Length: 72
Image 1 (tube, one colour):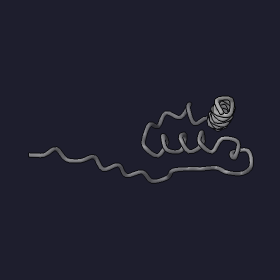
Image 2 (image 1 turned 30 degrees about the horizontal axis):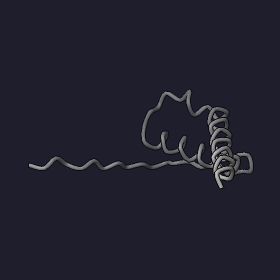
Image 3 (image 1 turned 45 degrees about the horizontal axis):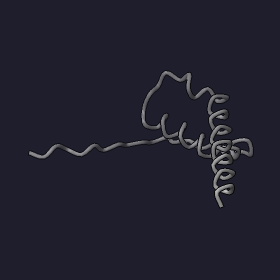
Image 4 (image 1 turned 90 degrees about the horizontal axis):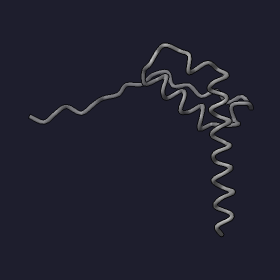
């Protein structure tokens, strides 16, 4: 049982590394814009992993973050 968890962990790390490579290849980290949409696009690309090389191109175009107002 313990060995299966190690293999699963390894596969998840490899999956995410492939997604990170795809984000680097798309130059998402060299973009000077820092906003919610850019961060969301990078996160989705990393999570999509190898699917990026099969035509998946996740993008976040609109990100409207509403921060809670402080209580009075």
